[in-house]
Image (cartoon, rainbow, N blue to C red; front, side, top):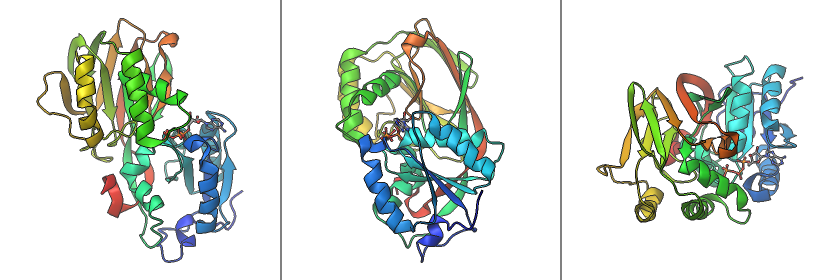
Length: 325
Ligand SMILES: Nc1ncnc2c1ncn2[C@@H]1O[C@H](COP(=O)(O)OP(=O)(O)OP(=O)(O)O)[C@@H](O)[C@H]1O
């Protein structure tokens, strides 16, 4: 039951609150490699205590908690954690039957790529209590693979990118970009392969050896700004298709990936925009959506597709810091 709760923005005093919002914070105590709890204690002091805090008890639980919060009538649901928590909370809201619930982010996770594009990461880190927050309707992706269906809000990766996620989940002692850079190097050693794949962007289909396919709504994937021109509400995915690359080339381009300036004229690096994409392979695929597994090779799934749903989600943004400005 929602009572008289104070919205986080109102509790900031000088910060403008758009409407009187009832706020439920869903937090992942495991996020940020266990450092989330400390940051949340800090947040409690910053935002005041009159916000409903609900912890997750296991992976996947945030989906259920978010759906429940929307159905109980909360008007704002905060995902406090990393991209995995945002992914789950977004999936809960998008399957709740309500499209007017505001998704906000308290980025206490490891990489927080979505919060980066929303401007919320810098807002959070700078403790920018006098900068007003705003709302924005953004696009989401609907992913289908082997009878599974789920929403994605930030990034979608097939092949090598999925294997980087496998390695990132094994590393407990790093956070953010260093974590994903190490996971990248490990994946390069352990899982480098370029099997033939049939890749379709809208109606253009082609078959080629493929290292990785990224189809992103936002700018960063695993901390790397590989689709840095992406806009959250432009009705398009930004994609990067890394075809028949060699190991040494991948290593050579790591600094460019970190800096967000991959070459635009490399014959094996194809970029563009689309509203639908599909990948089919002769080998089982490793696929992530927002850093969470859609499928791993052991699932035996060889086909995956993603479709853009324009303006499906209402999110809280910090406009001065939008897109990492
Ligand atoms: N109570 C919990 N116990 C263990 N794992 C959990 C719990 N709640 C959520 N999880 C899982 O923890 C994983 C990591 O969460 P999250 O992505 O939010 O943090 P992170 O990995 O630190 O951040 P990022 O994805 O931005 O690098 C997710 O797969 C999520 O499902």
